[in-house]
Length: 53
Image 1 (cartoon, one colour):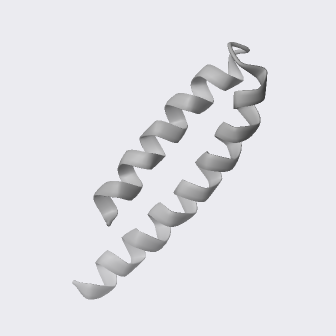
Image 2: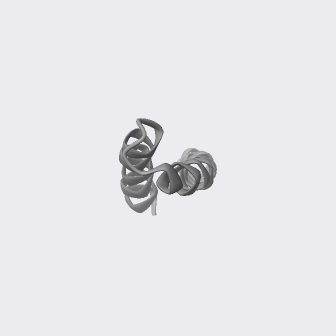
C-alpha cells in the first residue's frame, strides 16, 4: 500500500510541475487535487505502517 501511495504521489508531483509551469492550465487544478489527495494518503499510510511496527 505504501508503495502505491508513493508512486501516485510522484505522479501527482510530476503532473503538478507540468501544470504549474503553464504547459497545461487545466492540468494545474487536477494536479493540485491529486497532490493533496495522495499526500494525505501517504501520511495516513505512513502512520499505519509505523503503527504496525
